Length: 177
Image (cartoon, rainbow, N blue to C red; front, side, top):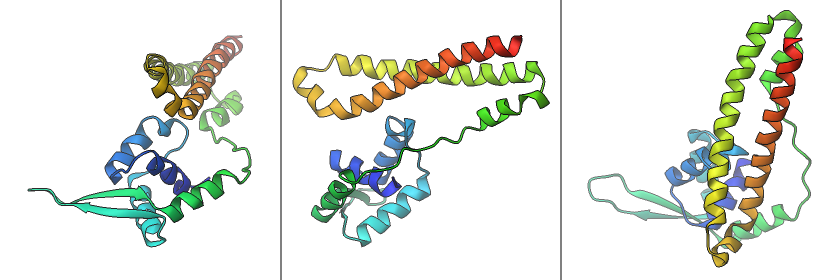
């Protein structure tokens, strides 16, 4: 997958400014796809040049013009083509696991402290995701349909955080041996 496809998916939901897209990459989508500010704006420029998105300029009083991007018909077709193409499962790079793998070169105290820091982050993420799930569950049935597939990505995140925390408890016991 590329940033291109992530942006096209987000623009399919609703027209957005670059700022709006960045908020989504820092929020909900950011739990499974990261993007930096510069990357998003470069990709928006390229997508516009390729005719996959439309750019509308909205004048603002006392501020720079607002650039609002939306999915074009060719962009929708490109997105649908990509969605119908099989992709390879992704692999994860996790520096903490590399550190743990080489843990024999570190002290147990350092490893436990690092594990505790990561545990705190995963606990905070899980709490946030559970809050999103609660909000989803409170939606009226007709609105839930719109978020059916994003909800599945949310569930994957919740299950993954639960699994990470369970593993962390196991790892803590093993390190303390």
